Image 1 (cartoon, rainbow, N blue to C red):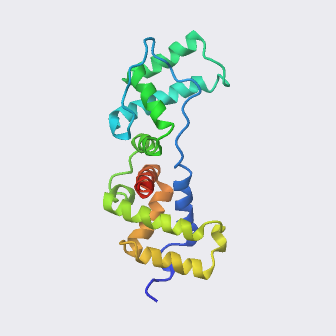
Image 2 (cartoon, rainbow, N blue to C red; image 1 turned 60 degrees about the vertical axis):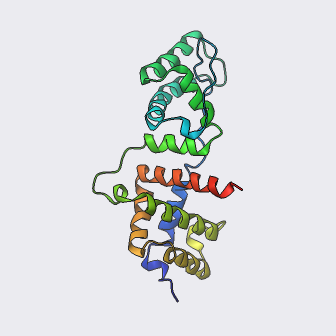
Image 3 (cartoon, rainbow, N blue to C red; image 1 turned 45 degrees about the vertical axis):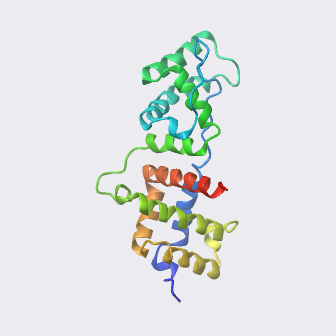
Length: 215
């Protein structure tokens, strides 16, 4: 048989744990209950993923932490003028204009790639010299593509109850992934343990899913 035994690559549980860790972060993050609004009418802003820089998205994420702290106390109610001013102040202190913050917030709600980009730029970077830091863009694509196939094989099956046929099929996916067994195993372990790499994988997964959905 061409593929090595799965146990020689990485345990089924570890692979599925890495897949689960990715899946937990693929949905767009919800916007706060009431994002701060600009005092003047908001001008039309581009809302495609490419319209926002990584620097802007990092500022958005920083501001969102404080904005959501206020928003979470509202329980669906409209913010008071004081609360509105507090949220707007948090945005302005991040370096974003309120109109730009709102444009990102509105776009994020319907754009999984943008939501994944925000998580990626916000995640702490992997330690220099670590496996997580060494993963190249090409390896990221190969790994993410293989994990999608593995999730399809294991769909609906508890991690500790994969059949021998499923394990063989997963082993074949790894063998055909373009990564050698040791490297694939190292990346899988790093994805499960490192939020920064996991965020990069989730972003790549969102991009690949969009490409697959295009006619």
